[in-house]
Image (tube, rainbow, N blue to C red; front, side, top):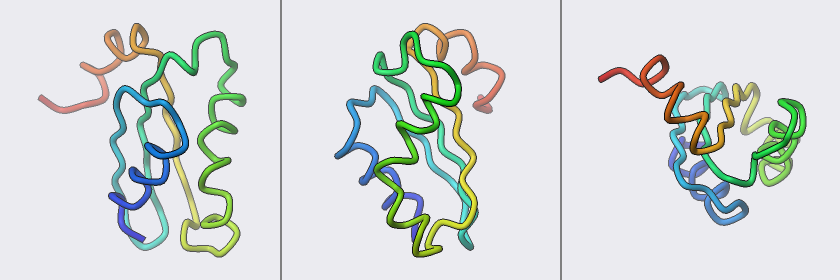
Length: 85
């Protein structure tokens, strides 16, 4: 599975402002940004992202997935620490 496929699946399932996926060999990292995450706990945010990818996780196409989910305001603060310039 390619990171672009993960991005496509998540874009189709969730209302996202931004998505950044990377990784290979079954190990992936995603950063997702959406107002959808406002008021959600970290666990609920991760569950929202895992849901659309569940069949790919079950089939082991995705073996490990690191998720960082932010609201747009959180992303404005955190982006400078996470994304290289």
